[in-house]
Length: 165
Image (cartoon, rainbow, N blue to C red; front, side):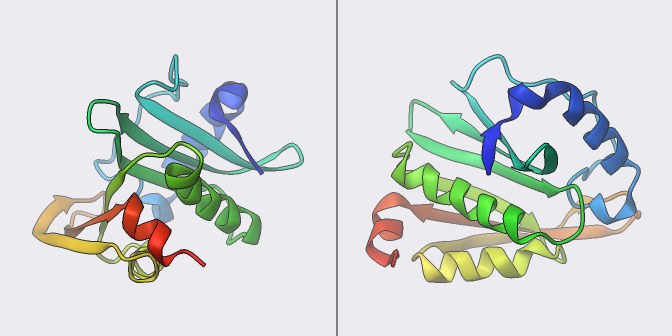
């Protein structure tokens, strides 16, 4: 179930600190740096959610909101545990909410090529009529010292609504 992240700020500080130390999260902590987690003061420019199962925090999902263009960018998500159907469903709900609940007109986001989430993003874009805008080659050096390409996506609300089942 999705909840506002601000309700879980203290618990998220621990989750993020633990996640930072885990090599599998190199695609989330792309620059090998992290601050102590602090919830946004409002939902005006940033929507932050946690995926929870009972009292357990499964993951974190956030995106930036541009009110001037009525669009969303900088989508990020991290699963704090192992693969979870609940987290996957919550992530898909967050994407659905962007267009159906909050009525944003466009979503821009990206992924480092090689991130396990890339395949899921590719399927999402194909299913809902989005597109790959392009790929920046050797764009970002991650904590393993290697450079990774960065793939950029966009999807419009009109295309999403046309293609949704």
